[in-house]
Amino acid sequence: MREGSLEAPTRHKIDWQNPDFWDEAKLDAEVRRVFDICHGCRRCFNLCDSFPKLFDLVDNSPNETLEDVPSSAFKGVVDACTLCDMCFLTKCPYVPPHEFNLDFPHLMLRYRAIEAKKGKVAFAERELTKTDRNGRLASLVPGIANWATDTKNATTRGLLDKVAGVHPEAALPKFHGATFAVRAKREAAALNEAAPAFGKRKAALYATCFVNYNNPNIGMAMRAVLAKNGVESKVVYPKCCGMPQLEHGEIEKVAANARAVAAEMSPLIDEGYDIVALIPSCALMLKFEWPLIVPDDPLVAKLAKATFDASEYVVDIHRKHGLAPGLQALDGGVSMHFACHARAQNMGPKAAEMLRLIPKVDVAIIERCSGHGGSWGVMKSNFETALKVGKPVARTAAKNAKTYLASECPLAGEHIVQGIERLGEADLPAIDHSMHPIELFAKAYGLA
Image (cartoon, rainbow, N blue to C red; front, side, top):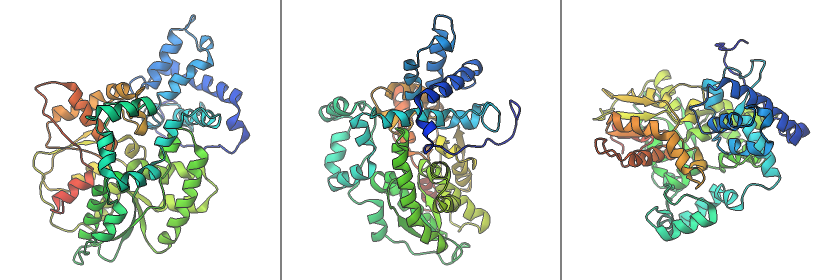
């Protein structure tokens, strides 16, 4: 493969059960090999903070060579990576099958996995990633939880800063007493038997921890759109996909979640259900990351083949069966942020494609990282950098001056809103919240 080849990149399995994976000397040699190539290339200089940090390390060394940089300095580069995968998918000319065989995000994951195995993930950071436990507890007292995490509550946010290192100004997800799974049981929608897809599709909605505990409206909008189009749906949520643990390199925990969820989903696939993940990070895990982490599990492979992203699923129904009539125009247009983990699924901008099925809609795609990076962007050490990385997105969204701001990643959407607020420019319109594209689609149907 030549540099600049148009061949699709291939990704190797994450060989975490091989003893060599955990060998620190071999890791250091591989990090130095990759960093040397990256320093000479520099195509990723504007993607995230990892690459400027790397280039500065080398450029500021005595002889401006990687040999002069101590291995202890590499941690800053690793910590700045959000595992968005954009360098691998959109910039790097040396990804496999190129002979240089670069996979920068998975190398950062390997580094973090060794750190995690050595117990170097802070206690508070580990506790923040336990989304199922945290969500269940907060759903018992959502009012108190939301009061405590509100950025206007200086006392509790100051405490959260000291105890967990969460930046006091970072917007945190809200919690609901009635989870998506609970609401789905209470608020079933009748199927539209006149819809073209009636009787031809049925979907098991993988709720995801975020939709289940933090924004059930996304799931309810998806169910309403599916019912309008005659598609039976049920809500399934065995447990979190493990993306929060993956960010900290806890690969074994991710593998356990993958096997458990795949085992529970398998009978549904056999019954003819499509699996629909409601958040792109979770869809990415089910489709791509899990098969690389547990490549020997046939149920994980089976699940990956049966999984759709939410917007991708609506577009698939449209293409194969046609949509039910009734979509009405959304006045004022939509600024549509193309989230990194939606881009990483290699399916094209499906959310924008879905929204353009709405009559006379004006969709402006913003195809750049918001800078949030999951739990990474709310930490005190990262928040200002996250806003800096996402500033071009915030500025573009504000200058688009559309009525609606949407992102398939709700965390990215709210981070963009904070970025717009930080611009502080009087001539830019105020945008107070973002929406998931499926919520806008439901609105166009008059369902929300």
